[in-house]
Image (cartoon, rainbow, N blue to C red; front, side):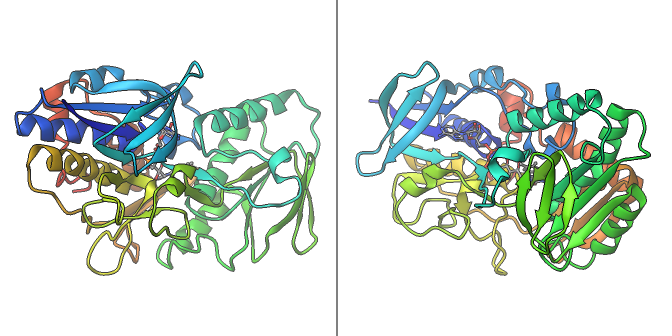
Length: 402
Ligand SMILES: Cc1cc2nc3c(=O)[nH]c(=O)nc-3n(C[C@H](O)[C@H](O)[C@H](O)COP(=O)(O)OP(=O)(O)OC[C@H]3O[C@@H](n4cnc5c(N)ncnc54)[C@H](O)[C@@H]3O)c2cc1C
């Protein structure tokens, strides 16, 4: 009987798991002995880091030809539950039929989702850009505002959360609104962050540049305050400040997708499954976890892989390789990713590029913006649908960031 590798999720880590597993099977010359199947709602890679932009037709490349080229089968649907005792999952096809699928090795790559706190009006009256359909809903709303009467609430956009996504979103909004309204004289964009500083995890290095960008782009910053309630036409802050707005964009709080709870063992505060250096879920022999699902050390200095595309691309290559290596008799490969960089889009101001976990600023303004555009439109995209070309960049030690 053939061995079965089953992957849930076709995001960055799931797609690279599939290619990397196929490469390992091929290296061992065992293509006739191993099936690789990937399950997700559709055979597309959603380019989540671009969801603050508007080029939606470029944000979900079709990966079916690529998967076919490397010999991986795609099933449209979702994994509903995982039974690690029986080594099987419940699969629900996109036409609603449920069935069991058995595996020899399972790779959990279902990513993360925004977790909304219990704030009155938040679910009903806010937008977000966590998933593609949500980013499109926001965009349609913003475009629709053009036909509304010009009021303070219509002309004010509030971004809640001053982390990476909140900063990029807030600084993109002025130019998006100018393109929609054709006149920026009455626009107001406010970013609200409950910590005392914007970008609380971004470190001291890039912060003055971020502040400079906010000032230059006309984005107001409110720190040390949270949101108490949201209605269709206003936000009230913890401090009782009333801000009229028809557009509130929530950006805080990603958590590992709920299937993580089906895997025994320890989980971290984001719900991620704790994994060993081979990305095996601790104590569950046949399950590997990857991307935003995995809590794993990135190096031997105490740094933990972030919920980021940068880490998901490497984690996927390692999880796929290891899941296959065990089955075909290759040595396992320990995950480590010592180089860490960030490139933060700061709207018309430019961008800021940092290196290291303490985020030393190495590039800024136009130069960094060009790098950001290269990352967003090339580096994180799937390889071409050619077996050799894909395998050439799929080794578990392939370095994405030079
Ligand atoms: C707005 C935004 C901006 C970002 N910007 C950056 C950035 O600038 N730099 C950076 O490094 N990172 C950024 N990130 C984070 C980055 O996008 C994620 O860390 C990355 O997508 C994680 O990859 P993943 O493979 O773990 O999950 P995802 O890319 O989320 O893929 C998950 C996959 O699982 C599928 N799936 C979900 N549930 C199921 C199920 N039950 N069954 C089967 N399939 C399922 C989904 O359809 C999808 O195919 C950003 C994220 C967002 C939302």
